[in-house]
Every structure is written in structure tokens, then in C-alpha cells.
Length: 324
Image (spheres, rainbow, N blue to C red):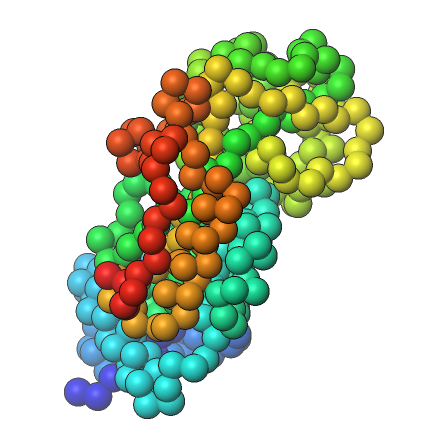
């Protein structure tokens, strides 16, 4: 039985999105074309891969069994193409955590990392799927468990975060705040907290009981919502340039200072030479900018401190061969 790679790609993307319209959009084809490819694949296999109904799309038992080897087949096909045409193409790098502006960090190293081709991931699960399918080579954002066993990550930057709140908030005039002083305030989040691991863990750790969610329509819209209510606050990286909005304050957090951990993520065994250049550039900038300083007596990380560098730890070395 000969499998069509385009049909396989349509199946894998639809299985990851569980929404034919979104899957088609990521492949730059129409939903009708995607449905036809999947229907032809199902006909070839002699079994249904998806259940389609009023409650949405989900995988059948056959679809669930077919998905892992389908992903491996796509990765092998992409590797074969790369081997045939060479590896001088740009390194395809995706990002997530867009409200925290991950491209600020990548921009600091891009000039020394070789040619990069940026992507537009939405969150860690979607970026994970893109890495495993071979659609991208690397990704940059905050990594948190559980992480797929086929991926490797390296800590790049630990960034202090500030509290942003309304100028009418009772604590707005403070020169600095402890995180537990925000108890009684409302944590305003740009989406459901089960998809925002850092904010979720911060709220749990420091007893922030009152939480509310908004829709992520960009930083300016989000901060306008924060400024509009004297009970609200949120967290943003300390050096993130804020839009000039009336009625908004940014206050440092201390005792402890929360740190947002940025990591590079790639598929284990990926041999694109650009990965070495990117990790080397990140390590060099981390050393110059003291990006990896961490003191457990002063700082807070959601993950166990054993997984973070100590205050005196050097920046991680770049791989001298293919990562993995």
C-alpha cells in the first residue's frame, strides 16, 4: 500500500487541531481540499480515522493508532527531502507566549545565529506538534511539563516579571511589592488559566484566589482592560516596553521575584546546522546579559529549583554536534 504524503499531512494536522477549518488554514489549503485528502486516505485504509458529528471532530480508535506512525512517516519524508536538497535553508523557528513578546529575546541573538525563518505558533502544544511533524526546526518560549519525550530543550533566559495594575489600585504607588501582597486583587489573564501555566502556578503559590480571564487581542487591549479596574493586576516581563496608556502602573515584585523561564526547544536528533549557531548565540548573550542568574533565596520559579541554574552557574554551552 502506497501512502500519499499530502494525505498523511492533512490527517496529522487535522488530528492535532481536531478542527478541519483550522487544520486547513495551517496548510494553506481549503477545508474542502483537506476533507478530500482525508477521505481518500480513509478509503485507501478501509477504515474511518475521524468521527464527525454535532459535538465536533475526534479520532476513532484506528485514528489514534495511526497517528504516531503517521507523524514518524512525515518526519522521515521531510528528512529525506532535506537530505536531497541540502541543509542550507533557513532555520525555521517558531515562538509562543506572544503577549510576553518572545521575539525581543530572539532579536538579540538573530544577527549571530545565521538565517532564521520565524513562525507563528499559538501555544506549547501546537508548537510541539509542529516540531514533531517536521514543519519547524526549533521553537522558543516557556517550557513546562509534560514535555514530549521526542523533544529536547535548553534554558536560555530567566526574566524577572513585574506586576501591572491600574493607577487606582490601592497598591499602585508602592515602590515594590511582595507577591503575597496581591492577595485580594483579581489576577487578569489573557485566556483560561489551564492554558497559561505560569500565571496559574503564580496564583496557586501566592494565594491569589480571585482570578478572571479575557480574550487575547494583543498587549494594548489587554493592558487597557487591566487599567480599567482598580482591583485587577497581571504579570509582564520587567523589560517589556509597555504602550503609553493612561492609568497603568508597573511595579517590581520582590521577596521573591518571580522569574519567567525562556527555553529553546527542538526535535531530538535534528541535524540542522543552524541549531548549533542559535544555541551558541543564545549562550553568548546569556553570559553577557546575565540572563541565567538565579538565587533561590531571592527568586521564585514554578519548576523545582533543581532544574534551574544557581546564581553562580555559567551559561550553557552550545552543542558542538547535532543536538540530541
